[in-house]
Amino acid sequence: MTGRPLPRCADEELGFGTVITDHMLKIEWNVERGWNHPMILPSGPVGLHPFAHVFHYAVECYEGMKAYVDNNGSVRLFRPEMNMQRFRVSAKRMSLPDFDGEQLLKCIETLVDIDKDWIPKQRGYSMYLRPVIFSTTPWLGLTQCAEAMILVLCCPVGPYFKSGFVPIKLSVDSKYIRAWPGGTGNVKSGGNYGPTVISQAAATANGASQSLFVYDKHEYVTEAGTMNIFFLIRNEQGVKQLITPSLKDGTILPGVTRQSVIELSQQWNECETVEKMIPFAEIKAAFERGDVLEIFGTGTAAVIQPINGIVYEGKEYKPVVPFDDSMLQVRLTNFLIGVQYGDIDHPWSHVV
Ligand code: PMP
Image (cartoon, rainbow, N blue to C red; front, side, top):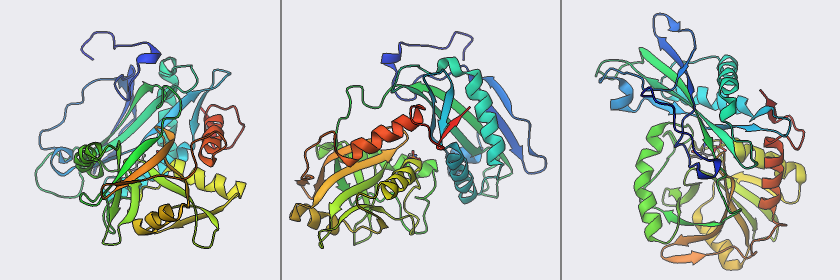
């Protein structure tokens, strides 16, 4: 970026988003001319007017997806059309210009192909792709967007868990509210994320590594940090259910992994799959009955994140089933990873 070769490191040393690949995609828009030609450029700084709306009013949104190399050396994406669709929905909510998701995906595929040598080949490794769109409108008045830019950045990443599955603890945060009906919780805009960093510190103070966000006096469960959350429980009638917060009230990000887990759970039909509003008291009661069997988060970064405890008002609640390989979450993980790396032939895997 400064004329020096970009830093590369051994795959084993890769963190999350610390190494940027050689190239980035850049597409500019303005209200008179529409979208300009997409450009693939050396990764580097983008000069913006100091008044650009993104700096002052957080007019932006982004996506997160991964490219994987299969055993034949082909590059694969996982359900990328869902990311493009969500990116458009987020952009609309932020009054950013619309774009053609299929065309953007083609540009992303070209970028990924150019930088494919950066994708680590080892199993568990991949290249994270970060599309972002922001308003570059160069004045301080808060108006409709007049200028915008899309960037797509790539970074090689290692497995989320270097030593296999490591369950984490959550801490219920009823002080800092991540999302509420009518807000922006259901879109991937940066303004949802910055204000949650403070909550991380509170989670750490409670001996947990992520916050479980809730809202309202009913403490409806929303998300686990930056993951969707699932509980495998026996309900009061003894029926086994995989439950996750519903998308209806607009507080939940419609995760690609979430949707995939719901579809797989419905197909496997080992339990009922239920999307609904979940007051935390319902989970607490299930813990007290000994009816919480499994808890996990879902997201592109970790795929599935096992959760082995939730701290609520100073007390830790734990699922009754000790962690083992026959758990639903382990089988879901193995299936999803198998599809992502092309070991399992499945329409969700998209060869570039
Ligand atoms: N919830 C939030 C708040 C997120 O940021 C993410 C990551 N995109 C997810 C859930 C998981 O979504 P996905 O499965 O599409 O990565």
